[in-house]
Image: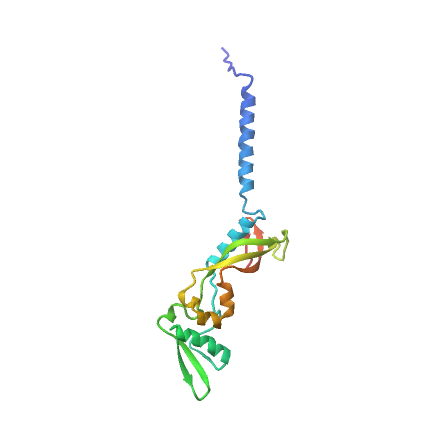
Length: 190
């Protein structure tokens, strides 16, 4: 005895149509949200991930106790003394001021970091082209604001003594970065 399964003539068509519809949805959803596309949203995400654990600091390579006879450095350090972050002693024999962190200043010493960047917009970017790393690279111009700025960094005296920090914490600073396209998305090359 033979068993014959009867199917309607339109069943293969329905199965094929369902497969095509599923593939179309998958390709559209993966293409629109691709982390490797050259889009301002992807650049913003890559830069914010990069800056999240990279703080901006007054002294990237200074060690304490710190001694100086330079009048500009002395003026800058004295603003941190006024903000109760440093103690100062003067060594008369060598005409040098010697600075050490206070108990409060020890939380920020030796680098005295004043926050991290958060990208607010991408102003422009170059078309991706093969870079030195071998990956496609783009040069991005972006706007950012500083997050987690401590109270001492907002002091008028400290801001007057450190104009670079003041410009960065002003609310809408701009900068440029190079981003490389990888399989995981856009990244700032190390």
